[in-house]
Amino acid sequence: RVMLHGCTIEDACLIGMSATILDGAVIGKESIVGAGSLVTKNKKFPPRSLILGSPAKVVRELRDDEVEELYASAKRYVDFKNNYL
Image (tube, rainbow, N blue to C red; front, side):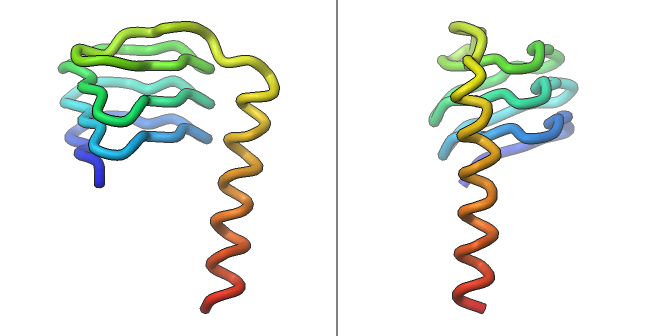
């Protein structure tokens, strides 16, 4: 479960369990917000960011292989849905 409140999550992001993202925050495309992270009000993060902590900050830019895994992971979830529904 996550808390997303009045924020913008761009395409192909992964939001970790128990993360909270507050009003006006923007998570750039193809980013990861780590489990339990707190993204404070109006904070903006660039694409391909690894975002961790409380308050959250960019730890580093994601590598190409990590971004590819975001897409592969999303596809696996769709496949699971198709197999079980």
